[in-house]
Length: 99
Length: 383
Image 1 (cartoon, helix red, strand yellow):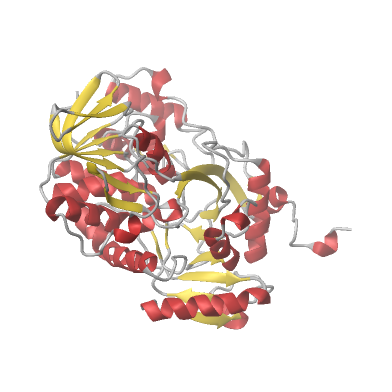
Image 2: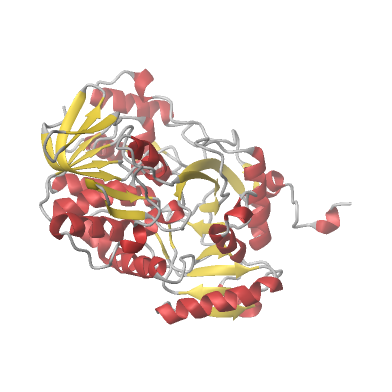
């Protein structure tokens, strides 16, 4: 069963289409977590902030499960992306700058 | 609903349980897998994808890993699903000259077992991987190290197992295991139950909880590993990296109390870098900590200075099933007819999943295994 909408990009960061999400659901995924692990939807730069709700609605539509059981996927730190040197505090890498 | 009975009941839907389910299904042995949450939802989805030979103890541990590595080469075709397996080669990064003698010894032992590994000086290492810091002392390199997507691997096993007839039940937590009057086990999950001649405990860091249901003391301790994920980058490194300190921490638990003694770095198929890992004994606390994240960031940027300008987009932590011997528990348990262990791989579960699944399936099918399992049963006790 092919749907012309299957090519529509849902997760823009990871370029995951509606068709790929539907396939993950067909293989047994019933939560955002599971769709994420199977497809990488929500694993990109925005960490699912853009597509999360949409993916959840797709799952709800195809499984009949209530949205509150599907959302949210665990939010992982950091809240916004942060440079390695800011996170690590340049503890060891630039001794000259540490006075 | 769970069926009334099955030849084998596997407890745990991580990479080990999934591999066992697949290898049993391939042999047309009827298996039911029970998972308390969803497939690949704990240890196997919160780890790196290393299939690293150089980090295995020379001896039976390395032999097992080499056997597993062979299977990875054909696994994607066999399972018919992408697992992002890449025979990328691996390096152990030496940052202090005091580490050289130990690494020389280690390399020699590994070579004797048949691992293709060489010691490189700083220039040779940086020629191979220009992103490495000028401050490193040297590295060991093996073309036999590889990487894989651990989640894709687990799902590929479980999907193929299901296609071949395995039955998988999620959102069911095993609450009790009892004996029937005969030779069968009854595995209960709340209101449901299933009878079986063979129970396989593949519950990873949660295996001791399953063990207690049959009065079996299993010396597996959860050990937390925190990891960071960077934004997607063009190819920065081609092989996977471990620091020599990581190897020391792995085999010396006293060292490992400190977060980030060693570092692991891989660039995944999607272009992100996964930076790890702490090795902490903090019970079943699977949270990331500021200290853990900061330590990994600082240590990773010592190995690859260019990482300083790269963004971290995610941090996560997983619990590894640590065992005192460094070896997993595999095979039948003496004094417990029909109870099989397949847990305790610590950070080697992904790398050892193919061979573990095959060996357990061999054991169930014929009572014999290609690799003797005696070494993997020491330290288990029934009171």
